[in-house]
Length: 270
Length: 267
Image (tube, rainbow over the protein chains, first blue to last red):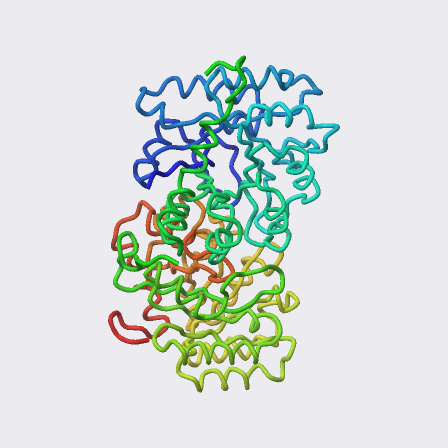
């Protein structure tokens, strides 16, 4: 079983309730992965979320470059992206090309309008060019609505996103434990939607999801360092699923998505 | 369904794991797969959990008698694995005392669960709850109360703890929404308050912080199963960076005397 965590960050977060806050360097993240028995992680920089994507993405690159090579290969950089209209990041085609050239094969967005998000619409007239560029590169996109634990994603936007970009792998990071009644018809309709495991806090949830939609629709993730890496591991390890399904969730599906990012686009350097 | 049953394999190989915060059955607000007692026992077996202390979802909403009956049936179906919290509803004040008597005539009931939020935010220190505190004080029965951001203030819990020092008071969700540093300050001098870790366990560092600040002997494992995924909670504890003795206390050692359990003996 090879574990690849799709949901980690490094940096010095501002902190929030319940006031258990820690700064995590790439080296410390690797040490925690080792302690819990996780092989690899996709990681963004919290500065890109809480301050500015361009600054955070650049800092992530520098910090990961400071790791020794065996550890460096275990951390997959995630680029936090925005629509292009304000000029905070390059035009989408250029942005995606730069991400791929720098070894980034996964993107993440925080579109919510609350104070924890980046406040932009996923509607085609706002995010269409960005999403199209990501889709063309088949770059997996982590969508984080920064939901409160009782929250609900903006379903209409999820629907439009999945429908308009069928070749874009979309990982719903924080679907929470209370949304199956609306999530399930979306999973049924759109094969490009995936669910992050620790964000799917449902009793027998992985088992139910896999039975209905297949194990390839769940992607292992933790939310570390805000949430427990050990909790995420035990959720998957003790799921009532055959080993082949657990292996797919643990890392097989995401490894495949990362490997295919940028495929077929000759101008993108690897 | 997997063919192996990891159960008591490391890291869940503690001699006694008591899940002190469980529910049972459907919940109106969202879909829960396999929410009956058999589904819960299956999840417990996968995780090595020995005993669940259960307050039925029906008991904390509509209706308390129906829910308490569900708990009795579950305890009968799985003897030794299921204990009960008696649920009462303060909006039926004339029935509170009688329902306590009815529940505790059954040996499976070992505590009282209060859920003010789902009973119209009736205050914990309101008169309709008085029979609960008096019953619990007389019989030394543990009382687990839900806490949340819009409910009773932390000071209400401490006032009750001071008024009824004989009552083991389990502060639901460890008072997560008050901020854990405030909780530490509030409970430090009140040994009858125990922190139910249900919910906070999924946060990195909570077990280490609370063990350091209030001591492992004040902490009790809970998962909210089937309201939430039990493994996400249990994993936050068994992978925490505290010593094994502290983990054993939190996993079951502290709950055992509260609920009249002995390690290695049937519930």
